[in-house]
Image (cartoon, rainbow, N blue to C red):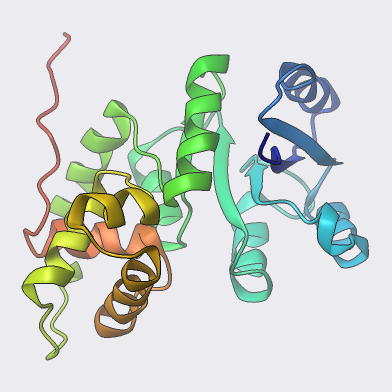
Length: 227
């Protein structure tokens, strides 16, 4: 059996923190290793945590005091770039979503999400680095319309193979799944991914997805109108 995904929960509402923790008590593939009531507490926990107790993913609320989620994410991106971040908040709006995307957050979920969606998001972020729900797709479309200057102008063009890798990344494939589909080794795919990041000036998978959409390498699936 593979090791469970190690997650940290950061929320200044004790009931929410305990409730989220209870959701994963009996989950074999996900383990809560840190519970923090705020950003400062979590940063201290990270400093003291041994390697085997370092989380893979942090689930962070936006509206916290004295350090809010925005400030915490910025500090984590600067000092712990390897840590994947999922925002779990009641403030699920276009402008906040766009800001979180620019900060390199891997997923953005409303607190009304059910256990199934939350679990899917955690597993997708762990495996592929990103998770977008149908609602996220629509908000991302709106964000891209509002930010036309986001289109990259880097002189280094992606090769045909690199574009294939980008498309598969956008479809939330892991490095191993990409390797299997393109008949490559996992190490070769990892090398492609690193070169893509360097060429486009992105820091993580979210940056690759934004680049692909802005440059029409990947097209978001159409949103079904449910109104």
